[in-house]
Image (cartoon, rainbow, N blue to C red; front, side, top):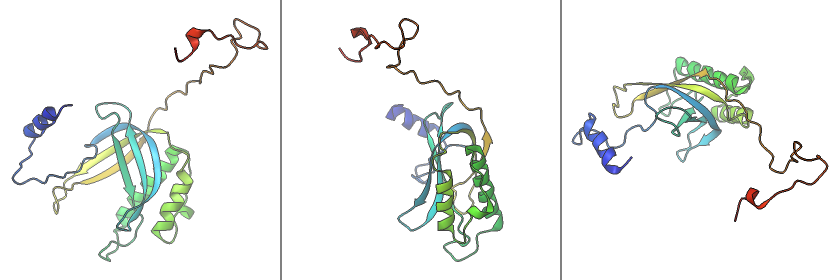
Length: 195
C-alpha cells in the first residue's frame, strides 16, 4: 500500500483533522480472526505496570501477518487506589483459563498468587513453550464515552482446526527407493544449493 493509498483511505474515513486525535488504537478491528499464539510473556513496562501478555498473529484473511498484543492484568487495585471491579477480574481469569485450555495447559486456582506480579510470572512459566497453537481470537470494540479516542477492546477465544504437521524431509536421508540404505547417498551437482 502506497502513502497515497493510505492518505486516500484516511480522507474517505470519518477522520476530522481539526478535532480528531492523531494517535488512535492501531489494533485489529472488531471481528473474529484465525490466529496463532506466537508469544506469551510476563511484561513489565517502564511505568512499573506489569501483566501477563499473549501475542496473537493473524494467519488468514485481510489482516494476515498483523499481531494483536493482549495484556491481561490481575491487579486487584487501580492506580487511583480503587478496587478493580470483580467482573473484570472474573473475565480476565476466564480468558486465561481458556487460553491455557487451548494451549494444552491446565490453569488452576493455585496459579493465582497473593499478588499480581507473582500471578503474571506463574502464568508465563506455565504457558511458555506451548505457543504455536491456532485459535480464533474474537475482538470486540466498544465506545469509551470518557475518552472516545481510546475505545474499549475485549477479547474471547474459540477453538480452531489445527494445521496438519508436515513431515520434515531429511535431505541427507538415504534414498531407499533407488539404493541400499547402507550405501552413502549419491548427490549430484543439481542437488546442491549453490552454483
